Image (cartoon, rainbow, N blue to C red; front, side, top):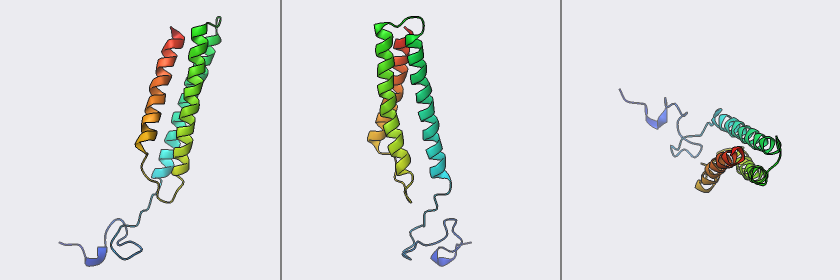
Length: 122
């Protein structure tokens, strides 16, 4: 059995607004789920940075502990900028994919936060 001509019966609603057969994008809730995931990840980074600062000053502050806490705060701010830019981009009608530069920055911030946390604990 074949589908009717003109895209009728397709899940994406048929042809596009230009009549050329391009599917009309219905983003649904996917951008909202992605935005919430970025918020959860930002909250996790915030908790890590706050706990690093708490650990650095708890029981006497050392130079290495304070340096680790300060670096954790800077990395947290960098991640906050990346996450904010991405959530703003998701507000568009047709959000594009995450640029590779932003993905590398987010991954780098995550790795650096983990390394600085180890440094604060040592």
